Length: 174
Image (spheres, rainbow, N blue to C red):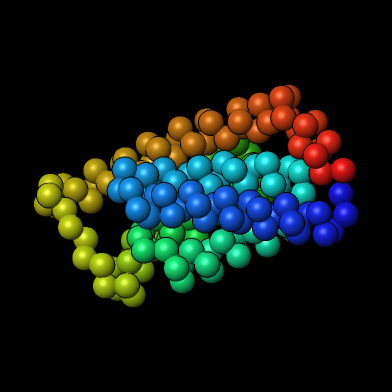
């Protein structure tokens, strides 16, 4: 694929990610799932155009999302973790399996924690919690529970893309 097609392809994916993040910003039900979907969409871009164009799409969608989307929690979840995780996941899988899982969970919890702290202290969005002090551990447990399923889903969707759709996408891009 030549570079102009790859840039156009990454631009289309940046626009798709912004649409997904906009839906997550406007519908509270999708606030946490929209960044997940954006990360899964990056599989197609990474496998078809390469890491360089995946990074380009991530940077463009992150900047535009932070500047223009109304719900900063949805956007920051994407910016701090799900946007770049597709790019670095292969590098995190290289160490031993147990170390790989430890690194992934540390990165995930640090990223989500940092995004929540940024929401509170930079954007001055209060942390409203109906459950009191029990809400924060439940939120952390819920986030980690979702991440386990995300980790299980990721290689399956990558394989599905290779088996069913990669040849079609490659034909469109030639």
